[in-house]
Image 1 (cartoon, rainbow, N blue to C red):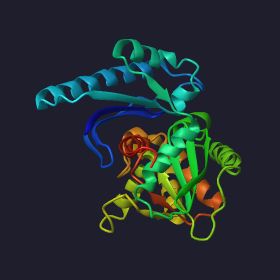
Image 2: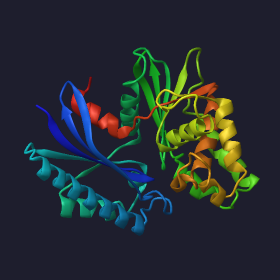
Image 3: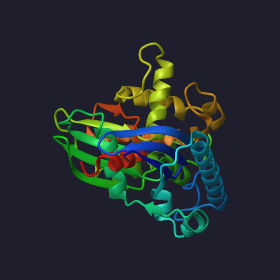
Length: 312
């Protein structure tokens, strides 16, 4: 029997809500979804900003009102189950109860704070739904607070790693000038290389690297807008190393205001997209991967797929 699930995904850059109908052994259908940028990962290291927490709580309450209204209007009386997950910003925060406490007390929602390994596996589970059965390579889930890397061999997860290289985190730590100064970008690249060198496997023959996350999708969107007419959909798009470098060079040369005017780039990502492009560029170079394959899936898809199919 199908079940109604309200999924709340508290990310470092944005909170995402999905209201879905899940049928065991069959799959899921999204009935309603929202994304609100709240920047939980935008404060000092290890701290959730008060304003971001307040914005997140308001967004949760709006979403829950909408879900209840939708159910009442449709007359659907099936039980509604809540699943709430949180990633790097909440995972690393010493004051996480500022967010988790009100959700528990006022809404009756218990949030599962994912470990880096759990986050990596859920992202990989989602991406592998669209990949060849015997896919080999790396699945990279780039978020605002961390980067998850999952090595896949013959269609099976071999190992996972999580490093604190999120786009919001890296932007806040290294990029202070507008436009950024060369010394800031050199320091950013050095830190990226230092952290991924030990966890990103060198590409073997036939290996591919698949990217997930809002920054990855935005890079794909910018590429498609610039090369309009060649392709419409981001899922499965392959961006060569040279494509990423071209996007990065264009972002690096302009101010934040000018970035907000770039075609294909959402203004709310203008401040963090450069760090993301540099991170992708460095990963391709470090691992020896010639291109990046785009996946439009996310951790939330992995959660819903797990609910529908279990461990399979």
